[in-house]
Image 1 (cartoon, rainbow, N blue to C red):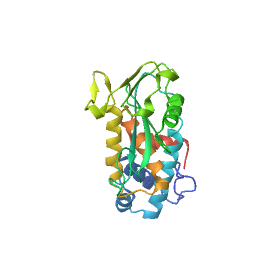
Image 2: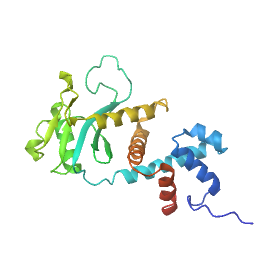
Image 3: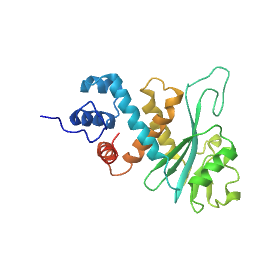
Image 4: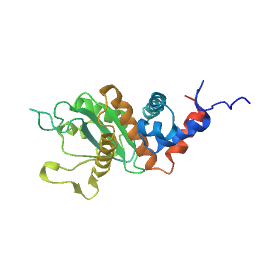
Length: 229
């Protein structure tokens, strides 16, 4: 009897059952090594499928529409905890990432950036945040001038003055996302620079599903049933 066609992967060499098992492991955020051991599928095959899943997630993540309402904005740095001879904000050797979180629903958008200058950050904000939004940031100087480009409701907390919340003015949500992402990525024991974007967007994707009412496994299954790998 001819085996059933795998509707999730084109020209697949593994069964639908194995594919569902792999999707379940990915949904549980298991490493490729653990997934290979649990499913009996080679590490090479698992790595290839995980890469394809992350590529699809990246495609979906970059299509975010502008954020409206109350948002939190912040930048973060990923990489070695300490680099010899480098101190301060964005010490050398780290990857710089910019993030926007919409409080209603908790959805996040992230982007790797070349620097944390006013020009770079304001360009992203202008493209991603509706002009009527309420913006919350810390005291980083790159956020100076948001009012001048039309964002009349800009609130700041000054961390250097031990100020982390003032009523509804805070960036606790986006900082929680940074903490979640760094904990997630730590289990990979180092990520190659060329792969970092995929893992960053996967963290964003997982966070956005977690804050909603959908389940990762169901989202992954539907995603590849409609548009097979």
